[in-house]
Image 1: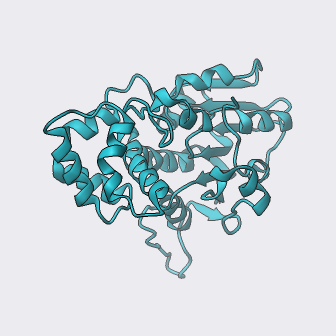
Image 2: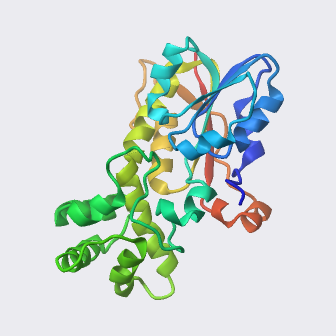
Length: 298
């Protein structure tokens, strides 16, 4: 099984504007597809790769130019300081879940294959989807499915979970799907369960807070003129990235100087990029991808 097929691979690498002796970060190493192409363009440069999934470490190539750090990218700045690698020339983050994680049933990410209610990116984490489903209050479940899954019937989903778990606890993804099957809109079942699983995954892995920390740190560690390249897969992520590039904050509220010039640490290099029809056909998981590229201002 291929660990992961990178989305918008060449557009991402082009966006980094790689210098052969530069220092670059692959903040979401995964299967290493982006890193391999970065290394091809480096000569005496350095690549620092982050991933908090221990499975990803098996994909690290034997190359003295790469430093792999088995940690979440929210700790990027701390480790760069530890190794004396600040500032850097470019940072790449592909926020999507890997094909490997989706297709390996025992990770619990898949809506197609039955597996345990897990969904942890970091296997050492204490919180899994099982605890969320079985232990969270009705109000908290409503909040999660509404905010993170963007589901209008979040209250019905939470109510059904609460009703079922009174008699028996949830253990598997299939049990959860069976409990919610009657709530899925006819003809849109796949999208419905994708949103349910998305909400749980975001909560379990604290993904949006981690993304905010990563984006703030990216400005602190980039050189002036350095590039930030981010691929997102749903509106919650993309909104944070878009607003941060636009205004330097997550609300998108512009700050201007005395002369009316926008004050922001980053400047968009171009409008967002999406996969072409050929890539969407070859890799259906790329359909929701959106690439944004920004450059740090002086």
